[in-house]
Length: 417
Image (tube, rainbow, N blue to C red; front, side, top):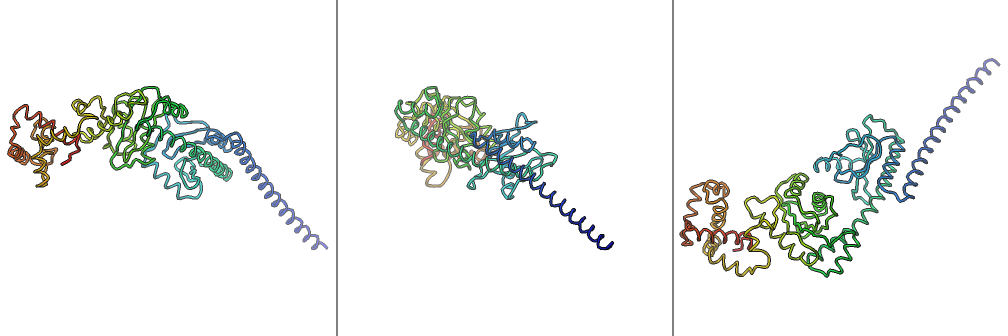
């Protein structure tokens, strides 16, 4: 009987231990379900109230106690909730940003990047933004991960909705600027601009941007728009071939836009052309031609990168849009015809040599360096130019006409032979 009671007591103790374990597990499950329910209800309230990025980060901060933030795919801050917000917010280089996104895309869940936990908002496979928690002490638990995952889903839907609206607006804005550059009636232009929240009756500038090696895709267009952004109204923007065209109220600040783009793209060899201020909508077809002229002059000048304003073109304003190209071609044939023909027949570069010689004010050393030839080679070429053209390069009038002819041939006619 004593042995039996001992066995019964042991069995009772074991059953109590199992009961306590089961109750503990049940309490844990109940606590987890309660936390999950809290997450669901909190984010559901956010959605019911219209969502919004600020509401999502605030909800995530309240759920986790960690500062929450949203960045766009380029690394720029869109929303922050919590303490210790950096001011100014640091912006990563485009190379660093792309490396971070590739690293995060390889993982199925949240990824730790230094003191942050980040997840990508990728509805339908398109990367639209980054959601992150500041967690420098690595305190995040399963509840934190659960809240971050569900907040990411809410953000993905919010960004997808915003993207669809943005795409519609962008399409309408591009259609408007395309019509303005081609020429459209004032009544229609003003009405469409007003519907888009753009005051078209103010003075505007037409700006053309070209960056070798960067196709005018959505990414490059975004960089241009962001670099040109000011406190003024958002510019109208469109693409034409490999160039981006902006219509903006703010006059570009000399090389500020070029400097910003060079920093973002990691390449300084782009060029920007700016037309004079125009009062819409009638002058825009002329303004785009002037901006393109300024861009072409810049890209065919000695310093090919940077910003050129049409107002600063000097001689090229006289040889501007609307000139009779046949007259210009006749002038070039008169002064350079023999050299152009010689270059075409012998595959030489005598016209380019003469152009560079004039560009450097007749300085042999600088011109030879620009042409990457020896000084004696330059002297030989100039002698051949004298022999072929029969012109005296020492004569003031001859030099003036030849210099103008080389500039017209190179910039206005595009070096056509």
